Length: 415
Ligand code: KG4
Ligand code: ZN
Image (cartoon, rainbow, N blue to C red; front, side):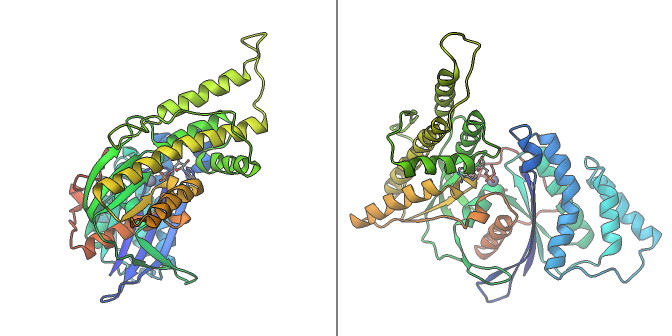
C-alpha cells in the first residue's frame, strides 16, 4: 500500500509518500518534501492567510514532483497526449482550481509530462487551519484523485499531531522507517501548537473526546507573542525556550514571576492571553523611563533571559499540572504529546520527570514525544494518520467533489 499525503493547513507546504507492505508493520517513508513559509511570514510576525495560500499554490506541484521522484514513482509519459485528452484534463482542472488559477498551467503540464504513479490512496488535511490554505491542498488532492482515479482519505490535522508520538522511528535507516507503538487505549493526548492547546482522550485512532482546551490564545501563539516583545524572530517558541534555558543554567533567582491562569480550575481548560498580557505590562514598566512617558530604553540581555524563563515556567507549569491531573482522573497509563510545542525541551523534561516521580509511587504513567522533526507541521504525520485509520479499519474515502475545507474542524468530529 502506497499513500501520497498533502498538508497545507498553515505555513508549511508538505508532501510525502509512504509505503507499507502487506503483512508488515513497517512503514517506509519513500519521499518527503517540505517548504516552509517562515521567512515570508517572519517579516510580519505572523501568518497572513492570503499570502500563505499563494505560497502553497506556488510550491505544491514542484513538491509533489520532488516527493514522487524520490519515491521512484514518477516515469515520463510514453504517450504523447492528444489535444482532446489534454482538453479533458484542462476542463476538470479549471473547474476544480478556479480559485487557484496559477496552478492550472502547472497541473496541465504535470499530467502531460508524467504517467500515473503507483499509489493506492491520497491523504489530505481538510482542517482545522486557514481555509484558503487548506483549499490549495484539497483542490490538488481532488485533481490528482480525479485524473488518476485514486481514492482520497480526508485527514484531521490534529489527528496527524496525535500519531507523531505514537510511532517509533528506526534510527539510521535510509529511507526512514516507522512502526506504531502498541498503545493501550484510552490514551491521553496533549496537543500544543500555534493554533491549539487541547487535552484529548483517544479511545482508538479516529475516536476522540476533547476534555479541555484553551479559552483564548494557544500556547504556541503565546510563545510567538512573547518572542516578539523580546525582539526575537518568528516563530518564537524555539528562541524563547533557548533564552530560558540559558537563564536557568546561571542559577539566579528570577526577579519576574508571571501568573499561571486556570492552574487550579476544576476543568481541563487553559488560558494563555493573561500570561501574555502580564508579560507585556512587565516589559512596558521596564522600558518606560521615569522622567518621560515617551522616553524608552531597550531591555537588557539579562532581562530578556529572565523574562523568557518566567514565561516558559508559567506556560509549561499549567500544561504539566493539567495533563497529569487528567491522566490520573481518567486512569490512563500513556500520554502522547503532539504539535509544534511538543518540540519544547523544558516541557519534555518537566512532564517526563513528573511521570517518573509517579512511577516511583507505584502509579504507572509513560509519556511519549514525537521526534523533533515531526513535531512541527509536515505531511508525514498526515500519511501516518491515514495508515493508523486503515489499520483500525476506520477510514472513509471521499469522492473528489465531496471534499471540503473546515477551518474549525474539531478532533472530536468525523471528517
Ligand atoms: O504545529 P505547528 O508547526 O503549527 C501549527 O499547527 O500551529 O506549531 C507551531 C508553533 C509555533 O507557535 C511555534 O512557536 C511553536 O509551535 N514551537 C515551539 C517550539 N517549537 C515550535 N514552542 C515552544 N518551544 C519550542 N521548542
Ligand atoms: Zn499543526
